[in-house]
Amino acid sequence: MTAQTLTSDQWPQIKTVGLAGILVTFSPVLSEPANRAAIAFRAAVKDQNWAEIEESNSTLVSAFFRIDLAAHRPEPIVERLQDTLASQDWLNAPLPDGRTLWRVPTLFGTDRAPQLQEAADLAGRSVDDAVHELSTTTMRALTIGFAPGQPYLGTLPDHWDIPRLSQITPRVPAGALVTAVRQFCLFPYDTPTGWRHVGQTGFLSFRPWADEPFALRAGDEMIFDPVSPTEFAKIEATVTDGLGGAQREAIT
Amino acid sequence: MSGLIVRSIGPACAIQDLGRTGLLANGLTRGGASDPTALYEGAALLRHAPDMAALEMAGLGGTFVANGDLRIALTGAEMTATIDGNPAHWNASHALTDGAVLTIGAARRGTFGYLHVGGGFDTPFYLGTRGAHLSAGLGQLVAVGDTLNALPDDGAETGLHLVPEPRLDGGKIRVVPSMQTDKFSDQTRARFEATEFRRDPRGNRQGMRMDFDGDGFHATGQLNIVSEIVVPGDIQITGDGTPFVLMHECQTTGGYPRIGTVLPADLSKVSQAPIGGTLRFEFLTFDQAASIQARANASLATLRRVVKPLLRDPATMQDLLSYQLISGAISATATDKG
Image (cartoon, rainbow over all chains, first blue to last red; front, side):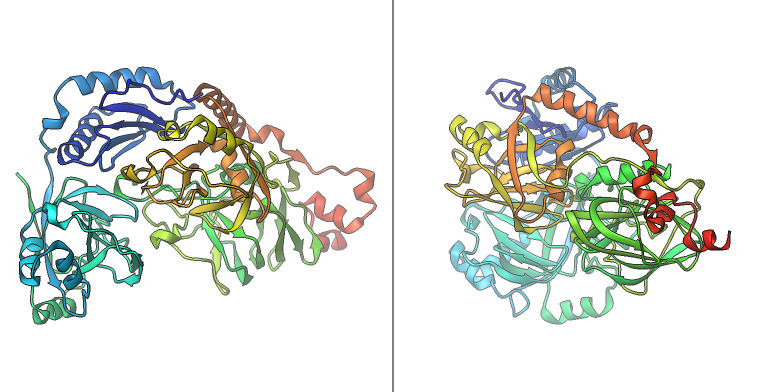
């Protein structure tokens, strides 16, 4: 009945997703090489402009190609995907060109990000050491999803493998920097969350009114530079473009 | 410019179309009408393109005053409708003359009703299309006092009718195996197919919870699944073993395993199922699903062929009021004058 697996049990695996498309998964668990492979492979296939592919996306460990499978048989497309897979070692592939590094002014802790102390305790670090680690690790947008423009960012050192809250926080504001399981999320809207709120930014990853509504692409990088409450108040009072004083530079 | 002025409106009415594509990598799902088939039906009745924007009305419609002459069509969930107090057929097109009052009441069958105007509604674009994507903050619910303008209408014909594809009462829902179907045992899948589900009141444009009696449905190693792509129609199983059918405005990724994906041709049946309505899932093979869906797509593309003039049979002519409405192109006032 389940003819949806199109390759053997080896990795990467190729599967159909309903009649909506084809998924190439590089690993059963999240790892840096698998995430990099997903981003790089999706970019490589996208560059080939296959007529059947209506759009594509990369998730944490997979590349997804949206294809109308009621109109196109999967087998020939799978064959071409396999050829592209065989063309290089994707787990050692570089990330694609054209990525951006964002440096985002961030107010860590205070009453604006009240779960920093708790998160630091769980990570076994003092608040000062925690802020140092959280603000100096260059974080990659592993994938964009769940909400529009919302990045999942990785990856913090091992001791930040802290669990989600058992009780969801009913609301954190837009621009909230939250952490769990060695990752950050940066929310474009006010939202409930089970991740701990450790920093506040004025950076909105989705600005529907802007010429460029989506600030981030999978593979972009972010550094969260600590600022004082006074500096943060000044940014909030003066910056109106929804980017919270963030600076961007091209990654070369 | 012709349009409709909103005098009263139900709590969940918004402009919808076939949704916006190309933004999956930005975390935005397609969205669009909960019952896309209804958009094709409205387009066939008004002889315009299926990507025209229409008003989606969840459960309850509203009262609208025609500003200028308009053609309208009514599709999807069957709602009580009147034009200047006279009953108006559902699944049909009608003429509204300037000042006419269209009243659309509560759904009698199904959940999402649609009001179309000839040429489609000319409301603002948000990221490329007019459809509201409320969970993403794009567009808004229609409110009292709004004017919903229509684009120029090339057509003139009204008084047309079609017999819709049955989809308002739940029933059998066909399912395509998907990427995580094999994470559920054969026994679990068999029990899933044998279980009668009821549409739970907890449902919206993002997802519909399925209520049932008995044990939950669990994947093997459920807790270890990495978050993965979500597509509309996916049936995700939450931690307590409850299925949710993810609808057009779902998120783009999710960590709950998917037991299968509702055949796109049957997703409108899930949208339209009344609260408490029963649903039963049936797995197809991939090949069966692809060929059934291809046929469904072809019949949507040729819907115009099944559109017929409303019949003037003696049974309906006995009631003069509805005869005048059924004939459509002639309003009651015009007939009086003529």
